[in-house]
Image (cartoon, rainbow, N blue to C red; front, side, top):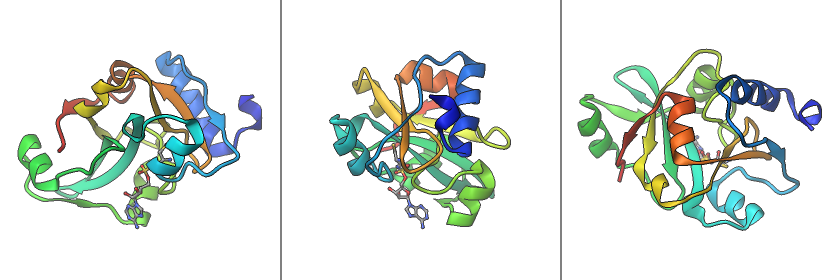
Length: 158
Ligand code: 5CA
C-alpha cells in the first residue's frame, strides 16, 4: 500500500494520482536500479523498461525516457531538439532536478517540471515499467500515458 512506500515514492504516487495515471507503484525486494535488473525482477523485456535518464541541454535539465534496449545518441538528440550541447547530468544535477537519486528517477514527482523527451522505441511495447522514485520501486504505464504524464515530446533518440 502507498502508505508503506518510501517518501520519495509517495511523492510519485501523488503525482500519478494528480494526472490520473492507472498503474500503482510497487516496491520489489530485488534491485530495479538498472534496466537489466528491473527487467529480471519483473520478467519483462529490457526494452519495455522506460529508463529516466537526465541530461543537461544548453544548461537546462532534460529528462529522456529511454527504452532499456538501447542508448541515447546524444548528437542525434541535440540535432532533433535543435540544441547545441547535450551532456549526461552529474549525480548532483540529477538530484537537484528531480529530488531523486540515479537508479530511482521517476518520470514525474519532481520539485518542478523537467522538460521531457519520450523515446519512440517505447511504442513497441504495450506495457512499460518506469521507476517509482527509488531503486526498488516501479510502476506500469504505456507510451501514450507516459507522454501525457510528462507532457513529453516523442523523439527517436537512437
Ligand atoms: N530503476 C531503473 C528503471 S525501472 C532506472 O532508474 N534505470 S535508469 O537507467 O534510468 O537509471 C540508471 C542509469 O543511471 C544507468 O543506466 C546509467 O545510465 C545512469 N547512471 C549511472 N551512473 C551515473 C552517473 N554517475 N551519472 C549519470 N548517470 C548515471
